[in-house]
Length: 166
Image (cartoon, one colour):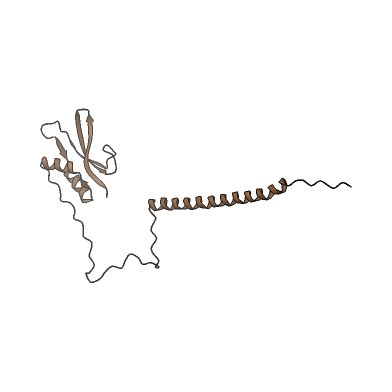
């Protein structure tokens, strides 16, 4: 899940006001939030942060990550963040057995979609081959045209023979 719990700035110039929100990390700062979890007003002297910690813990349990700035702010104001859910380590294979190599030449491999770079490289290669074949075809055509012109030139250049008078 790519959800972050972070601050979203509201208010006006020289009058900041922040909302604490759960939002997809790919959205911009004031994007549409999944849920508003609290608020923070840095200009108030006392009780300037209000957070629903039950909702925060619920989002963290679902895999959301808290931004560093918000976690520092919460710690400064005395809120206890729940521990991050531990990632389960993948089971390791026994040391005696080795994995088979990804694939040997000659064996059928699973299909993998080509990367964008590979596609562009292949297209450039095809374009180069096409260019060479068209150039050779043009050269052959020009040579044939020149040979035809050369064959026609001596016939035209010869002195015309006049019919004999009788």
